[in-house]
Length: 219
Image (cartoon, rainbow, N blue to C red):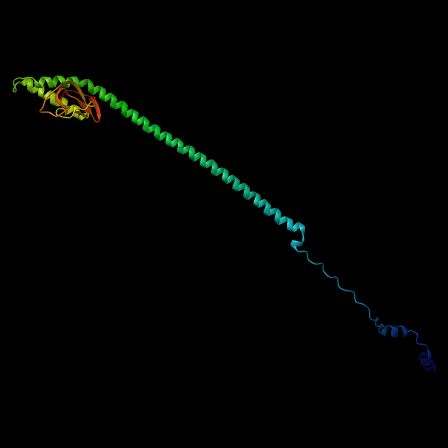
């Protein structure tokens, strides 16, 4: 009896406890159409040419390179100019030294030739005496004369080794550069202004006149 009454109560009792669960089970009303928020657009990327800082940086770097290049060119030009001056000074010094060397060598040779000529000129008197002694008449087989001939021949050989030669003046046209005329004769067998006789032999050392020949000139 009690069980039936209990089941009856359960059926007739207000079902208040399941109401929230029913409400929770109902789907939420769909929202009405609303404007979707636009997605944030990315800011336009700034190109290097549009940025003044980025444009100024390459230009400043190029200006610096140009400045360094101009400075290097300037230094190169100065170095070339200095090198040209040094080269010119070197060439001048070398030319002056070469002229000095040639001049001193010529002076030394001239001093030597003068000293040799002065020395040989003093021995020409010995040649004159030997030549006169050879011209004297005497016994050709005399030992004295043969000894004199040997001495004279040796003396002439020494002069030849020194480059001294005797002038062949007789019969040659008179030349005041080589002949010293002390007499004049008329001789139809000889040409005009020709050396007729030689009183003292003249000598040359190379092209230098050691002593003019003393001569007599015809016509």
